[in-house]
Image 1 (cartoon, one colour):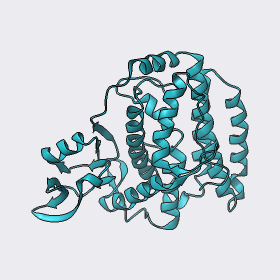
Image 2 (image 1 turned 60 degrees about the vertical axis):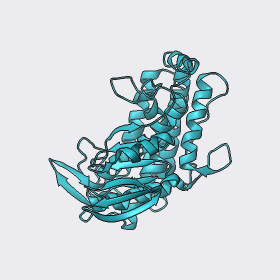
Image 3 (image 1 turned 180 degrees about the horizontal axis):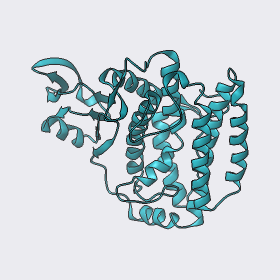
Image 4 (image 1 turned 30 degrees about the vertical axis):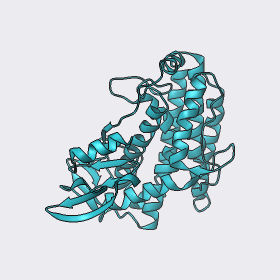
Length: 328
């Protein structure tokens, strides 16, 4: 995936290569046919010939703000099959959809529990939170009522982030907050979730699903509810672990890679240049689904979207991805 981060830069198509320039100076170039996705961060320009080349070759172009919001995607994706859309719409209000929503919540809970279990090896005080999450899993497994599942999902998130306050306190983390993020850890999480959402949204569209008709998340205007549903399986394994490791290893530093702006904390240019490659490396890292086999997280996201489409059409049961007790 080609991320264009340099503010004010222009990417052009020239003799089969994507050439990036700033103020008349070349910053770098790559063979155009090797690019599979493009992300434009902030004020970066893609010339019309370059955009036409990408769209003509089925390469999606993501438009991302400097604060991590996904503005939109330019894509040549085909329209979804009508039969699949009808199955998705029917599931959204049936026991089939509630059953899959339950699996999304369970997957997120199990991955969260795996992270707390890993931290608990050096921080025994997390044992109580891990026990609470474990007990919550039993309630989720016995629940098929959508509103209660949404409540359990929210409670899972509150327990998980509250437990992580102490290990991440040195970086200003006091629990999950956003709009605006109020500390560096939340700023990095929000930016990572935005990039992950872009990946999941592309996978959702490619699988022929409507991104705004969800099973777990409620519908609202311009809310990609289905993409947010599927993203629950990958928030913890892809974004959370990458962000936590970046801080704990010193790759991300609260004063060197973040800036204050309008009451919030956001990644600086230097911070984005650290975090984006780390997230890309994580997407290319090997994931090990519970049912066996292994593939990069990027591939697994696409695979899970296709499995979700098959489950909605009644062709096979859905099997969610989650981390084992020892995150990898």
